[in-house]
Image: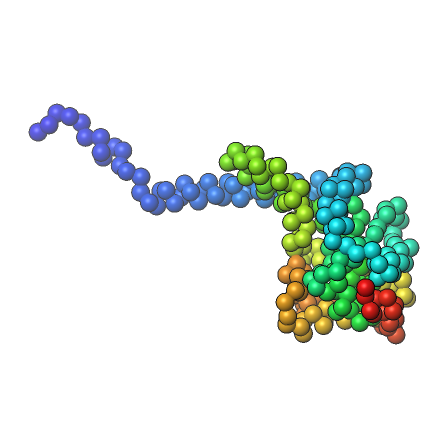
Length: 271
């Protein structure tokens, strides 16, 4: 018999099960860190001053300004936005909101830092009354009021910064501006955020017209369409469920539904 001690029984090889447990714990730790970072960001955006948001907008907005087309259509959109602004609560006044009209077939609207709303030609071609267009604009103003647009950017940049730190990839940080633009273009808000923005927009619609006719028309139409370019469907909740929630808000607030206002001629035939 050998006098050498047997170490194999003392240090058995690591089993696959143990490796999976360790890997699972590591991934759980990473997910927890990102969850905490997201929670911190959601609270910090409330403290971001408008001046900083304007600086962020000066980086992002020019990307869309290059695609925008100054025209009577864009002028009319800004006039409608001004009408909504006159009914904003005092906490949301003092900003200089503007609409940029982008002549692309994409059916979408986007809220950008720097108080800018992007309206794509595809969306404008889908609306059939001034009221439903004002509901869309009011909804985007709701995202500004709740600072949802900043939360989306913050989460996207945090992911990139964390990945750069973990893997030492400085190139990731150098493309942060491009990441912010992409994060906005692909932004998908939570169901709660969308409902809050709809509630805000619905209130503005009522204050502007004295009723909320057209509030659900655009979303009803989207739920019935099946074609490409519907980016609004990719970045917003299912239209049918959304319509149900808006109808509940209308009933809960006893809003009236009266006659629709037709689109201005420059919007009925966008240029």
